[in-house]
Image 1 (cartoon, rainbow, N blue to C red):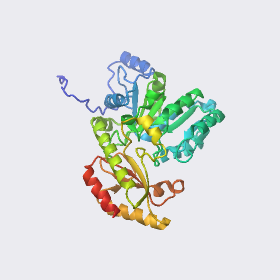
Image 2: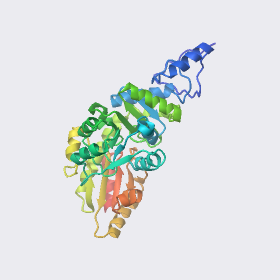
Image 3: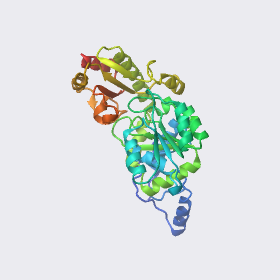
Image 4: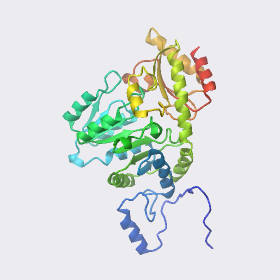
Length: 388
């Protein structure tokens, strides 16, 4: 006797590797339709292709991002690989232009995978005085004539905010497709697809998950041809998120807006505290009027907030003194604020900048804080005690 459907409000976890296709004709029809690469197939075939639990999580992200499709992958880097790879056209592939202030993993991928293994002409556009000169960008577009431009809405770790509307407009005018990594900003602050971006990627490990216990990525877009290309690439290389992680991600996405709003308000409070404290030389936070790209942040984010990341540099007359002040702070707060190489967690976490970025950011007094959604009064006390 067949079990009755369960009246659950949640999509269950389908751990099936392969799905029942009943007979030869149904199997033939399913595989023929599979070549159409629809996001939701008529019949599921194999979980590397598509999985109903993963599709349910994608639906949640589509609602947040306001996009026509979203495809989950097993990490942020696999999302980046998928988004970029669909624009690779063998020997006909032209140059790709990357803004320099992007995630270190993406920079390494550019060097070791795109350049060395795939032979892509990956070029770099550098900022000037911690902001992007769009006249210089336009000149580089004219000189390079790239097929793809890759940018981040908020950069890591200096929190440079890009004027996405202008960058996307200039890129499209030059004939380039635009990929935006929106991990730091999230759709709560801006939706790059609404500004004309071709693809948006996120490390869903960070704010979408928000609990530091899932590794996932997502590729989002509106163009159906790009969706089909991304589905095909994800299927062939195996960049599929597991149904168990998709189920947990679906539950965590329900609280995204609440969590991220609190993280933004906590970060704004800490940024002001650090700015006014004598132990701190400088604070980077897009919400501060003195931040080099505050005007870009106002234009892009409006009154949505400024993000949950704060970068700061400890005061000191010598590099040794600055390092001592940095290390002393990390040690004093270590009982409540851990040093973890990630971001978006429920609790505030620290990353020493020079230790991770090395020669690119050699200042020994710099740290990056991913601010959590703890009680702010308690968080402020922890920080003030650490600054004593």
